[in-house]
Length: 488
Image (cartoon, rainbow, N blue to C red; front, side):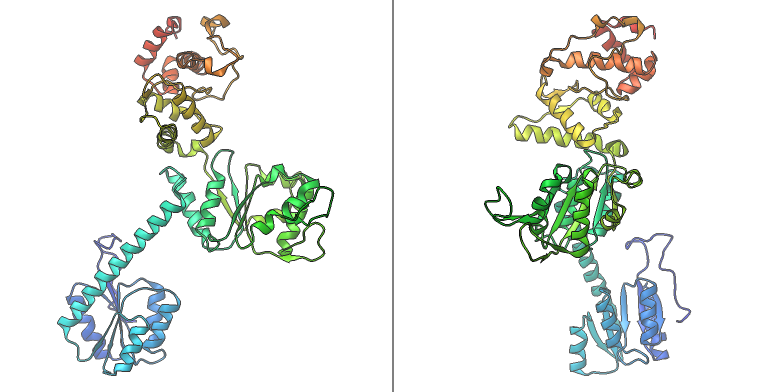
């Protein structure tokens, strides 16, 4: 490789706009290489030279090029072999064939292999510059189209997954990486994080997307029904089997079987699933022959498998069958910046489904949502938003109709959470057996009292925990007759 290799980086920037375009010149003739290098650099591009086909391929493997000027007749590997290499490795860099031969069949062959243009020596430099500029423009347009296709695909695959946090983006990128493979995926995440939504995204982004996606609640499968539910049965195989039944594994053939809550599956059922995965065969209850199956397994759990394996409540051999690719779903508290986005999404969804005019949150109500830890994750947030929407007193949701205490764990209604100054239970709003009778104002008053207790009487911490200013807290204390707390 010649010493005319320049940096692929201009002023430390790697964007297409700011960096110099890099052109690979592959020609076995030293004079031709020098001339082309001179004109390419004069046009404002960076030039890298290779004197044979093997060196050309090595250059391509080491860095990315914007255009390749490729001679046909070279030692070691000729231009056609280089083109085949590009095609085999799906490298879409535009190639301009530059050769002394004016052979029409040869030119046709080059174009069929994917060459952008075929130029003969001696070169018309003005013509070369125009062709290179057009090749770069077309390449940039193709890149834009590919990016738009990728964004469109993402919007389709992840249309039910709402948010823009770094934690969520990382998870979505991992989903994109694994969806193109046929690896079994084990999804780990707390209850309510949306594990099945990610499983669906993996399936519909895979080569199995035209096949079925079958979801199974493993916790609901008992020993005595496992064989029939998982693998099916034939008519008359047992009492009550009045017709043939296709099991989950066969239903998912040529598609994806989603085993939800796999950590809650009975050990005997685990053994049955392990055998099916090992053999890739199933046998219906009452049938003598086995049937081959072609499925991908995506499983999910909120359990700690390391502890389950140690306690012998989950088979280690099955775990390693399921865990070919591990995917962690972030909790809502790990993607707190998504809370306002999700809350607005659920509020709009509620308004549309109930055919009512648009609703919105008061900023202070959103702050309260953001300050809470959400142990029930997205499912809990959705329920809280819906309850607040149902019990609203207008189009602005300024008080949250929930049972949570911002910044603390949930406590039962009967627990005493008052400081000594208001410890008498008569100061708490009376709760009716009907939860709908518990008003928004009563809920807000209750939340203030509990936050005050959790912050050990510090009003600054109480206000911060509630997501409101200290002055706003003072107004609410007066509103709810809790002035005696101001001494805190």
